[in-house]
Image (cartoon, rainbow, N blue to C red):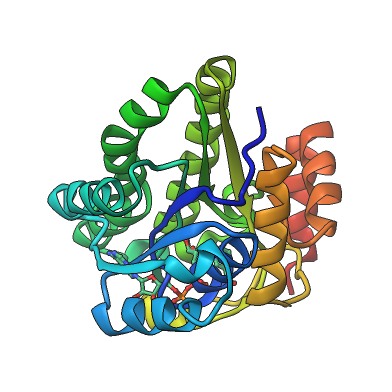
Length: 267
Ligand SMILES: NC(=O)c1ccc[n+]([C@@H]2O[C@H](COP(=O)([O-])OP(=O)(O)OC[C@H]3O[C@@H](n4cnc5c(N)ncnc54)[C@H](O)[C@@H]3O)[C@@H](O)[C@H]2O)c1
């Protein structure tokens, strides 16, 4: 069921920076033609320009301006991919933003915006791209969540934590539906990655002290490689810090004990 990245066609959202950019590079190096999409047109163009220097099909990648809160933008990306390349094999739903602060200081409107960007963007993308993949009976979807979507530590960024948990749950159930239909699903749950993510943070109230496991920060380039390899091998859960797997096992063994330990360990 795994897809051959050579000569495949990928759409990556939020590909103008960080993990999306690095994954677009990793796909293109393997011969995938990438539709590099971002809300920021200049960034999308710049990354497509970087890929244009590559030998092979990846050098034919193109840019598109796409805000994932706009279904028309996503439909335009689908139409561009079909016009240029005739198909879509791989969709990476990668955009994420944060509203950070004490929960009582984060307004409802901020919650609604984070839900729109982090969760409903995946729903919109599914509505646009899944009919194509289902008709083909092949393809792969990568949803970028976070370790904050697996583990209870992001209490200072609750809309992020809640939406990333939702993306994990959505992805797991989607795998049950899509895999028997020939379509792979992966859920990327990075820990710290060196990117421009601070630009996507809106802050409310006083900063809260950190709580929970601290994970090593890795490069975006290493995450891009990991994602491309995981898609080739049709792996569902993609972790950038193996410590997260240990935390997840401890959480699953006894949730009450895990929460009590986290609270006790907080200075
Ligand atoms: N960097 C980390 O430590 C980390 C950890 C866990 C999860 N993640 C997740 O990885 C994903 C990528 O983040 P990153 O760290 O590469 O961030 P980044 O800021 O480097 O890149 C995000 C890109 O998304 C674009 N973007 C923002 N809003 C958009 C919108 N509405 N529509 C389209 N594009 C939009 C930005 O212009 C930017 O180019 C996010 O979902 C994030 O939650 C990141």
